[in-house]
Image 1 (spheres, one colour):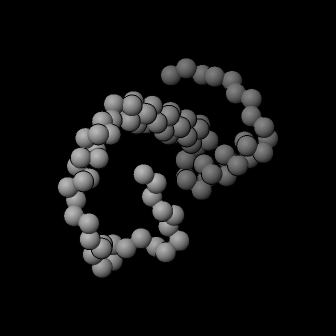
Image 2 (cartoon, rainbow, N blue to C red):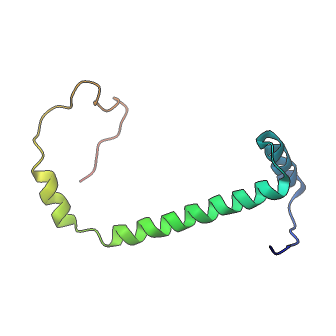
Length: 87
């Protein structure tokens, strides 16, 4: 493993120390895991953007056109405050 010096604002360091203690882990381990989670989120975002760019919206519309137009089953209704879906 490689060591690295890191400059952190005191407030961020204090919050990280508290979070690590709450997690029952060392500050070093907590920061490594936090960085790994952030990198994973960014990689997932890139993957989803790539997959979305390959979408075939005509095929999507064709598949949706085959779904019967009927009310949702009991318990599957959207909450009243749900905004309408844009086409």
